[in-house]
Structure formats: structure tokens, C-alpha cells
Image 1 (tube, rainbow, N blue to C red):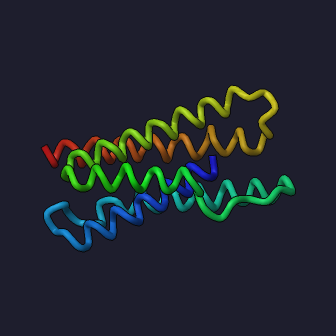
Image 2 (spheres, helix red, strand yellow; image 1 turned 30 degrees about the vertical axis):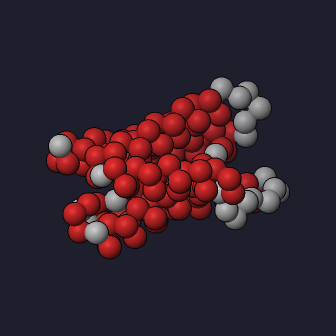
Length: 137
């Protein structure tokens, strides 16, 4: 879950940089709340991992690189493609969290974090992307 959130954070950073350099895509501020949501998720997950006595990865590794490649291709195809790819990623994150909740050995603290915070953040991201897609059409 943490590597997925790190990957999302890195992807949003890349996109916001692109938006700063190309005004035709829109303003990077429209994606800033989504970036901040992923940053908050990373912090929360890192805290839980440390609380459990484990070490956490500092980068998203291969997943992050793959996400950046896919997002880079979407950027080349235009704003709508970029937003749709982001939306697919957000929906994938929800599926990942829901799958994690099926694990009966999942620590209660992480289960609560997912159920009461992380899923809500992801759902808010999807609503935001829906609005941005509607205005991009």
C-alpha cells in the first residue's frame, strides 16, 4: 500500500510540473489537493509501519517508474487522457485497500486507517477527477 501511495505522489508531482510548463493543460493547483492527499496517506502509512516495528520503503521502486511511464504517455495524448489515467490509478488504489481489508491478519490500527481515512481520501480524489474530466470535455 505504501509503495502505491509513493508512486501516486510521484506521479502527481510529475503531472503538476508538466502543468506548470504547459498552460494548455490547466492549472497545477487543481491537482494539488490530490497530491496532498497521497502525501498524507504516505505519512499515515509510514507511521503505522514504524509503530509495528518495521521499516518502510523510501521510494516506489519499479511501480513508480511504470506509473511515470504510463502517465508520460497519457500527457502526450492530452488533458483528458491524463485525467483518465489518474482516475484509473485512484480506482486501483481503492481496490488495493479493499483487498487489504480482506486480510484477516491485518493489524487493527492499519484496518482502521484504511476504513476511516484512506478510502475516504481515494473516493474524494475520484470525485475531483470526475469534475475535472467534466470541465475538460
